[in-house]
Length: 435
Image (cartoon, rainbow, N blue to C red; front, side, top):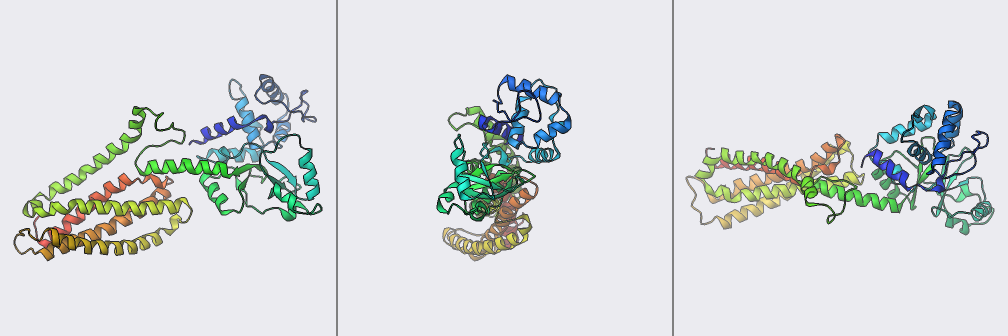
């Protein structure tokens, strides 16, 4: 999902509960009257306000606004107005906007749009309860953000805790010390941070540390569902979009468009497999039984590569692995592949011994030698396929691509090529067949 689309979607969710304050007489000393952001009257008032006041005054006015309110104002003034808002914004807001512009899927675009209840850290439980009771509007969540005397985020308080403590206890003493997340952080990073916490809420702050909103489990579950769908599609070589319609609502042509590019590309690469087989025509003609075990080598390599790729992609998504761990990953996968490859090699040797026991072999080639050559080729194929499957997601991550883009069809295609090269090289060399 692009950043501009995400931010646009977020502004559509905003309601009049998150209004900008401005007075009807356009007096900066009295800008506390609320109004509906979506009316033409409001738009005209804002334009007049911006054109008739100094940049310093407007920056001061913006200093008390949230990121959500800025995007409301920007959307309201977007069409037909020659007004450059960037010249009117304070430095902190410009910095936050730049950060949001450089992230494809910021948590700001999916967090709860309504600003949560804010309480001062020096408030007592009794004062907080009275404040909540005096509010004439419903609360957007069951949690409040505790701020310090400068309005910066201090801690998180679940409102039910107010009922569990004495009236004279300070909020600072009972609030949860939850690490906040900047509005420009990636959605998946925010989900991981929420998972590591001991609460259902993740406070979102701007570059000053002022509260912007709350990221809740409801939004997190949606992000995980969309990311899972995207990753599965990428692993299967299907182009994906987070805003696409459901399977039944999507037309046949759209389905074809999503799938055909990967299929055509991999089919073109797959030609190399045919070229390899053709280059070993003489070897196959001399010992036709080699053709019988080609599918086993190719399929086993594809399965081994896909398995390791899936494990690494999952570990990267959960934050268990970093790119700097690549050497550890390769060494571990080599050990895993060696054990799996050894077991498969023994199984393949037994398979050759039984299936080809009645086959007439030319020259000095024995059934034991044939089985050993095929077993060695299978062992090396599992080894190389597993390492390729493990290293490709790390390479994709280092190139700032989604590791899931290393799709299973792609791994299978590449491993088929390497598998055929290994198979024919090992068998022709050990069996003394001229390629």
